[in-house]
Image (cartoon, rainbow, N blue to C red; front, side, top):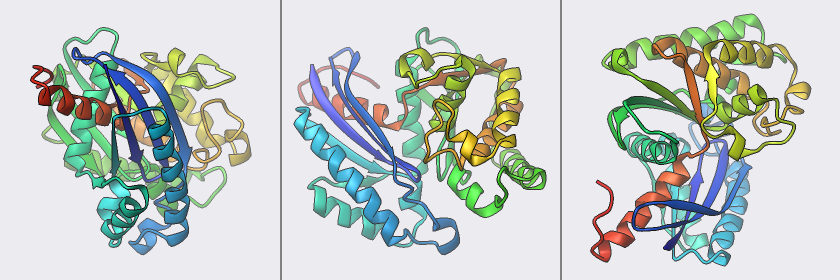
Length: 318
């Protein structure tokens, strides 16, 4: 076994995973944490990462790296996503973070992020089979990947994120119907333009990952406390996705904050995420979406573990 740590610095949240991985890539979670830092706050308007948001995120990042070190991780990988990619000062912020924590901060391309997410999701499915389409709804972007096994043969990173859409189009509480219509039309337009080449006719299964999807899983199961083990591989049917979307979009922020699985730092942006998820299901001919709690951090851990095993001559992965 090798113990790997990974920190995913997203536009809305920072997530840590420390896990043991063997030569057959069986993964056992030792420690996982997540915290909302809203790194991308105001980014859509200004084009830069705000200093206050950067400081909040750095505080969280330092704590998570210390947790990984304390947990005995032999390798620690830190990666940033959409906020770093699009911000004019993204590289400078990443370099500043790296200097403080003592580890490089990789800024993943949209394609790299999508491939790692697909690897992570496929590794956690109870019965991998057929062709899958995976959606990862994030704060700054949404990744959609089609493929079989662990390989995404079609993949794309879209500039559709919950934070971005909320800051741009939502003012009401709850969002006004006109605002929701604007989000929906924008998502449909992007899907129509960017997913034209995706072959949805051969999709056997859809899987969703990210805070929006896991919150839907908790709500569908009626959980009073968030429990990843119960949510993993839960099937959200089309009807339930529509029903939960309508509910989330119709109640005020104070009520959304009290829902299991919807953290205080996600409650304001989840209506936008709900619309993205609903339109994703409408785009592909699937009966629903299986919930995965294995996001980017799991892909980072598996990727680092492969480097270790390959350095020792073990024939792992692809």
